[in-house]
Length: 245
Ligand code: NAD
Figure (cartoon, rainbow, N blue to C red):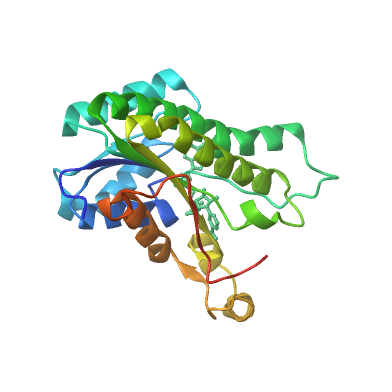
């Protein structure tokens, strides 16, 4: 479905981002795994040796426009284009408002919002010149409902939805589609570390009766990146088994 396309996946070293990268590779794309450090990128690349020649690693500071522009230019130089940006890197916390520091709030906003802005701008500049592309960002179900602690995280995901709708309208004239995927509770390292009884309890509260798998989210990312979604832009697609926090 993505043969000949090139994607950058931020937070692509593990969890949902790694599943997106693998899904894109399995569907014929070239992929740049974008991580925070070279060692974590190298570790991810070591698990993708079967795709040699179609995968590379980058590790710019996602909040630094110059570093991001240079990293994305290196992807275009290597593969010839940059067609898909997956803004997936993110951090969360559940700190109470009474204990929340400005530093923690800023850290969440930097990686969850500012980085989405910086990366989208850098990618859009390349995509416009190429005649189009697709930008997809990882939101969250808490970007619709909020959550009862850790207010910075849901606020950041509301912002991702706002950026998605606004950029979709702004970039449509350049044939750049902009969408988001809002996962519910998804099994990554953090969830796998919880006791089975706790995961069972969480699953029982989800109408579809299970937590999401990283692949469920990657499938939505595949759809939104592909030509099947050629008339879809400005959407936040919920992939949460109809869960409500
Ligand atoms: P994860 O912690 O396994 O992965 C997060 C990724 O973001 C990692 O690859 C990490 O290296 C990267 N990252 C974090 N800080 C970074 C920084 N400063 N610079 C560059 N990269 C950085 O978690 P995950 O669950 O795979 O999360 C992926 C996305 O999914 C996040 O945006 C998260 O908010 C969202 N999400 C996850 C769930 C869930 O239940 N797992 C639910 C809703 C939304």
